[in-house]
Length: 322
Length: 299
Image (cartoon, rainbow over all chains, first blue to last red; front, side):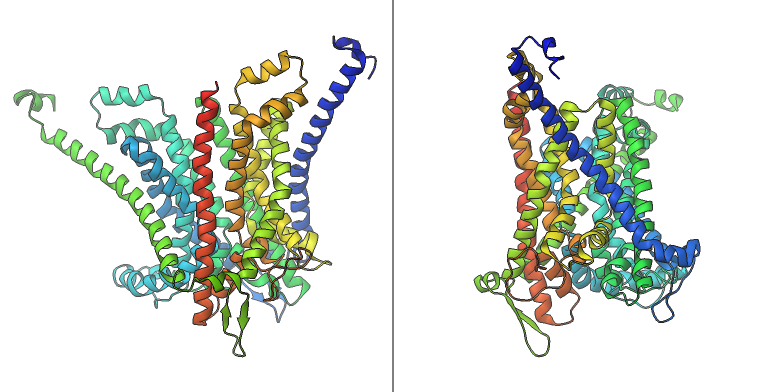
């Protein structure tokens, strides 16, 4: 330490005190960063540890087994995986076009004075606590769906098994719509940033060549940001996959395939953990719920990291932060 | 098409031009409708919460604890849930603000670009972990062998809050003008002194904003509390080493009961929670606009 002191022009004792301060703050802040990293490691380890019993009992067959039976002590994730994929898929099918349209409205079409307030309102949609959205889903949206939307779907699209069956207040369809509401603010705020990042000379060039605003959007803006829109969709998917509470409230908590009918109750990985965890009868059942958490964690981590890598490449290319 | 165009007056729109214009108008209308739809859904949810929650809301509802009659019907107030949410979120804030701010300082001032990038990636990963998984994680880590507690719930919520705070504070630190930092260093201050006396005071507004937004997010979270502090007495409790009631948990439990009074209670609790969360979000967003403008002025 003291041998390095002459490198600073400050008096001996002062230089040393100063560098101890720097070193201290650097160590403290680095420790905080390390703590965050450790938390992720600990989280993965804890979930693996919890899932260990179920993994060694069922192995990968867990993914394809349809049972969830506390009496025979046999558990499988097949229907819940299907439920997760079906709810997220339909949520994205509705939310992504809607969100891109909202992103376009907020970045290209809306009058300047409207952009900030409307953008804030759309973001406030994400601030509604999921449990409140779930409450609204059970008591307001669910009955509306079962009296208006499901009979209509059954009449007009009933030849597709997914859209046929008896109307019900709880089930896969309300879950899809609640997830749609949760995904829209995320995807639309990212797509707004993306469209804002398209260089103005490109947009103006297209307009100057005689393109209408829509042609400019379709032929210049959207191709420019298509990779970013893919990343936004993936982040929306991660959000939909991970939502437990609101889905648990509206999906009806039933271990059944969602492919039978969207009107019937089913379950997702996240909602199943929420509804079954506290009541697990055996250690194998609890371990199987940790196994579900492990699958959920894997899906969301892979999606998240992939989306971020795409976003990073875009940022490097265009110099924007999303 | 140019032949067709040249045969008519240059000022008269060709059918093709008219169609292009029409398609453009149509798509613009679709985009406007999409934005309108999002705002309408927000309004519908707020309206439902107000319409069903307001009639139940009263002073006694806010100040009394719930009572359950012999038939399991819940009535009375939600004072214990309000106090519980304040305590659980408060402790989570005390844990996550220092950690989040320190991580942001490390990334903005000390870490090499590569390390900072890696930490940003990991923070985003942490922010993307489903909250229900955070719930089972903290259950295995802190609840097994110790029982439910508000402390465990706070730790779970702080995992939700740290990435939010760290990311937005780092952004704020990046907006602190370079000449302030350089001026301080040129006067002979160390980096630590510069951070503490120049950078943090300049960024205080941004740190407060980040904290408010993180609190707004955490106060409404149910999943991290579900396995850490979900079984509680109806009495008032302020001991964080025991499980505590909270607004999200009360709404969740009441929403699953068939009883009308329980549902009324859920709506009124939802109104209180929404008011808390939405007001904090709006305040946070407006503050963030203001502090950004102020920092830009000091450039």
